[in-house]
Image 1 (cartoon, rainbow, N blue to C red):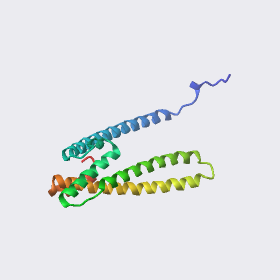
Image 2: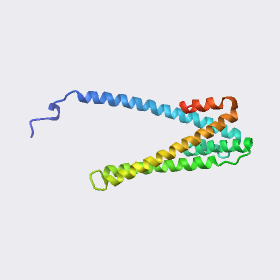
Image 3: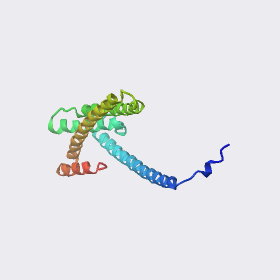
Image 4: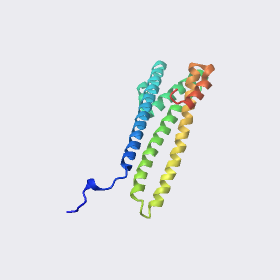
Length: 178
């Protein structure tokens, strides 16, 4: 039997500092999660209510992440058709961009796991390059989706308050909760 027991090992006080940092990080993570949940609820309620008032079918899709893109695009398409006589397919574009962005995000997560498993093999470089390529394509698609979302938001703001549509759009870009 060894003369050293686990309670006799030297400690440096580092464990307490690590636990404090982890505790602070968990509190910050909790605050961020609550803020995200509140933002999601507010945006879903408002988009659902607008879609119901405008007679958009399947307004309940505003509660789903990709479905909300479809509802926002439908509101924009309706405005473009009624006011300017244009037939646009922004709901389809937003739906496709949102779905492809989600799939690429999931594939990127899978490649990250494969990358960690293959870290010490010859295939690691190929997996790294593929993961970077998928990330770059996903970033481009998400930026495109964001631009289309802001275009649809502008149509929404213009249909409600034409004089202040640009101000609402800028505020919506700076403060996404708006």
